[in-house]
Length: 75
Image (cartoon, rainbow, N blue to C red):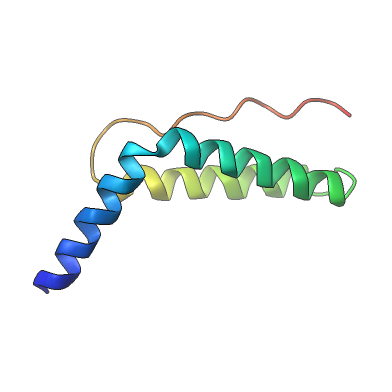
């Protein structure tokens, strides 16, 4: 289990130090998908981003929150 714990620690550090970049990528991907689906699945996309954000928050066990995403703009 030592190797797994070591790998998890490295991933946690990587996610923690790059959370703003990851959040930006999630936002861009969500906007791209939303534009390609004509806004039909905006609620599902937002739910998916929230769940991913929660998973990334819990990865390192710290209480610092992952950057929030602004609500989507009306099209």
